[in-house]
Length: 85
Image (cartoon, rainbow, N blue to C red):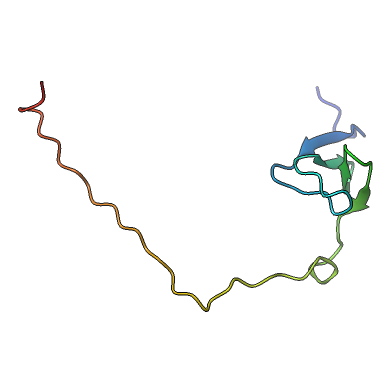
């Protein structure tokens, strides 16, 4: 039977994350232990706790909407198996 009260430290790398201090890519891991969560950089050792509210997080950057969106449409290609050699 597993111990539900385990205080095991779990670490998972965050794909594409960039360290806010040393700017190293793919070196940031999410660490969890009990109810605590924080990130750590394996390159420079920087760590910071998870924000407790959305307001404490970095501001959201809105996309540039001045340019028109481009849409690419894919149409199915009919395959004629009778003429394949």
